[in-house]
Amino acid sequence: MRKLLFLNVTFFFFLCFNVSARDGADAQPLMKEMGNNYVEVLYFHGKRRCATCMAIESNTGLTMRKFFAKQIKNGKVFLKIIDISKKENEKIAEKYEVTWSSLIIVRHKNGKETYKNMTEFAFANARKSPDVFRAGVVKSVNVMLR
Image 1 (cartoon, one colour):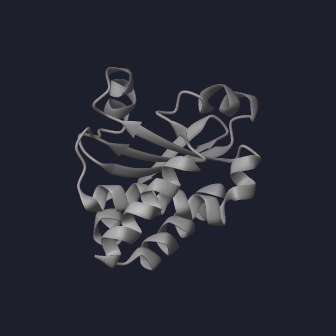
Image 2 (cartoon, helix red, strand yellow; image 1 turned 60 degrees about the horizontal axis):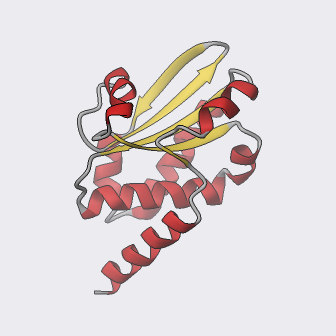
């Protein structure tokens, strides 16, 4: 019961104070202005989501706010929550070959893009081992920022 309450409160907090651009729409112009060196943390989800999917979104948002607030403010890191059930998100889902909930970290450096698919790691840790999940996301984002 406590875990469910914690997840609900965390999810509510995430929705109210979200630093991300929902569906990526608002972040695109800013990314272009900041140059071509930045990292995107992309969380893809469908219309229906399980508790683990919601934990991935919530813990990713909390991690980004806690550990990358300065980089987010400076336009070096972006968190995008993307609903793949929406028609306007088909292209980005196809680009990363996403067909269900997924977590992908993308580095844009000097006009080139590389990415790390963290979906398996996220599903294994976001809900039952959130500290491990957060540490893994922080490490991956920091590697991509180099």
